[in-house]
Structures are given as C-alpha cells and as structure tokens.
Length: 189
Ligand code: GRF
Image (cartoon, rainbow, N blue to C red; front, side, top):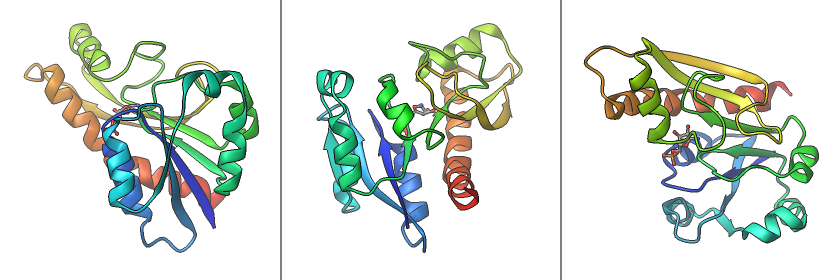
C-alpha cells in the first residue's frame, strides 16, 4: 500500500480532490494531512474524511528532523505539496528523494519562485498579456519551484479574461490532473 501525506497551508481544494480520488483505491491511500497553520481549512477537511492530521511549527520543521519520525510512524512513502507555502528543508528532500511532488499554477519556469503563489501568479500572467497559462507538476528540491518537471497542461488566456477567470481555468486543470498524475507516478515506480 502506498501511503500519501498531503502538505497544505490553505483551503485544500486540491487536497479534497486527491482524497476523494483515492478513497476507494486498492493500493493508494491518503494517510495524513500536514499543515503549517492551525486554522487552515484543510484541517477541517481531514476531519471530515477521517484522516489524521498534524500541525507543524516552523522552528521544529526547519531545525530538527522530528517530522521524519512522525512520517515514519504513519508509514508515509510519498509526499504531495498542495498549496504548501514553506520551503522544504533538505533533510526531507533527501529522505523522500524523488517522492515529493508539488503543483504550481503556472507554466514553470514562468511565474515561479519565492512569493509567487495564489493570485499573484494569475495577476502576473494577466499583466504580461500571455496568451496561455496552465499548471506544472514537478519534483521538489530545496529551491522554490525548481525541481524537474513531471507534467504540464495548458489553457488559453483571452482578452476577456481577468486574473479571477484565469485562476478559475487553472484550478480546473489542477483538479483534473493532479490526482491522476500522482496515481501514475506511484503505479510506475
Ligand atoms: C493551488 O493553486 C496550487 O497550484 C498552489 O496552491 C494552490 C492551492 O489551492 N500550489 P488549494 O488550497 O488546493 O485550493
């Protein structure tokens, strides 16, 4: 059985899609939700679906590797970042080498890096007058949004779009593809 931990800081709409997608899966299970925010809505989602959750504190996350023991106790073998805003420290990158994925709401390497998240990304796409945007699912290393790219999907940006409609289009792509790509990765490794 593959046991996934989803790390998320916010609303958790991707987390919800992933949880639902794997609910009846024979070999893949969402085992744990990890958040850096005690009041993140994603934690209520964990409760709703009966999934264990963990709130991590910054100093402990960055300066100790205690989290590895916690992940081990849940038998986690794959980490999904779904709107998790902290940089992943190197002890975690190394312990889960090739087994941490992130989703970013743009076509990396465009509009990535520290501080580029949420509406900031879509506003930058809007300002630039790009005619397309999309999603990137990528491996995670110690730098924001720089791990090798696993998958991208695109959508058109038209003159009628606003940052809000761009965000909606991109989110549809995220929900459509993220669970499937995770499944493909786990079933082919
Ligand atoms: C998504 O847009 C994802 O690309 C980014 O953070 C957002 C999370 O949204 N990394 P949600 O919390 O899953 O709704």
